[in-house]
Image (cartoon, rainbow, N blue to C red; front, side):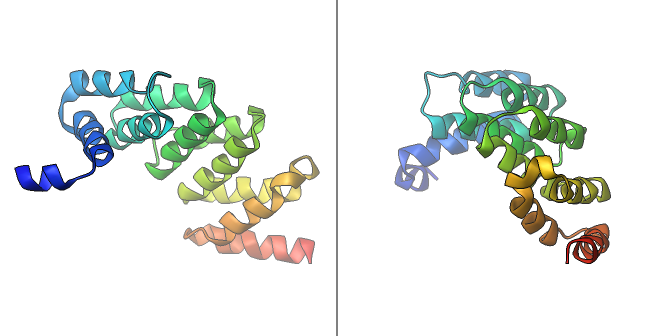
Length: 169
């Protein structure tokens, strides 16, 4: 194990450490990982801390990720947090991600919110993606929403996509 650990790139060890701290070391581990979201760390390290907290599925950790998704200064970090909420299918993620799509001004964040909605694989998210396609106020995101709707693996997404095709073509 020591040799295998020595062979890992330094960055990989850091990322693995953040993941295992969030997953296995309880509140203290999650507290340490949440400190790594601060600006003094490189962006890729901060993003790994966000994803590690999300993957832990702990309620307090998910609240931190929600806060980052809404309030982080950098759009890149907000977008990553939104993605993490969708990937882990966090409880209440639909409402969080949808509201972030509606209020965030960053195109990067809004595009990642569309991706995150699709990752939820729910009827509600399929309907929301269809609403984005239909709404002229979201014309800039129409293609992205249509693409991810077409790639969803939920039973209702096919029916919603058929409705859109009938309406638009």
